[in-house]
Length: 329
Image (cartoon, rainbow, N blue to C red):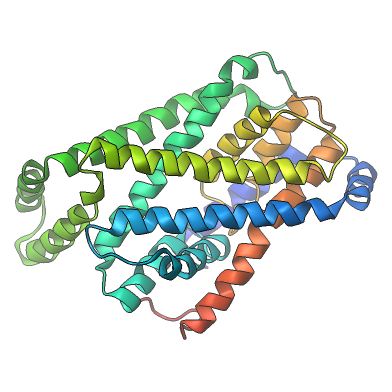
């Protein structure tokens, strides 16, 4: 509570919600919520958990050079990680699942975190692909919101960041000896003598976590799997849409999925409050959906994405015997 990042996230969330909900007609939003056909959430949640299983398989695949761990073992750990991301700020769930993996399978935290970062980079690249596929149509949309108008800029800067990171990781994986020499050179030049060996050990373990990317075929496999994961999540958007009185194309929902998930990389209150909702509402309004219906749909979708995996993650977390607020060791 005392960290400035926490308060910055709260401020950003509050500002985004203020701009997204200005002028909202509460009676319209309430009517949309009352009239929603919530049975459509059931197939949406089901397809989402298929995507979570595929995420567990992807992590199993990335970890193979370190240790072969069955996907069924990875699934609870992945679920705990997403629960942590939903409850704690700053995506602390990523560290949480790396710690639990070490406790259960003995995989070094720094090495497993390397695979987690690779996951996030591939996620970002696929999200950008969803956005770029729809940029020509996006240019024809207009709305009284700055979110839609700035998506091209977001996509450009996001592409530079994520694709740049992906190229860096691929090069580090394909040329491990050169990368190790460079890492040792930087450590010897910049790190005080007393801490060099500890930093060197962490850096080398981190590099071992990139071994799954050493061949183009393996990198392609991770990319295809990531695309499948996010198409499954878009399918959830599609199912939930049928609970409300509007319809947009699957490609429009791909665009919404890409935009809101890129926006959630910004600091926010726990659960991505505001960073998920504001761009989602703005984009739907650009497609002609009324503000009340767009806000109601986005709220229900957000809860449907947040609540089931958080509850399942809490269950698995309790089974691990870990304590809330306990030290991660």
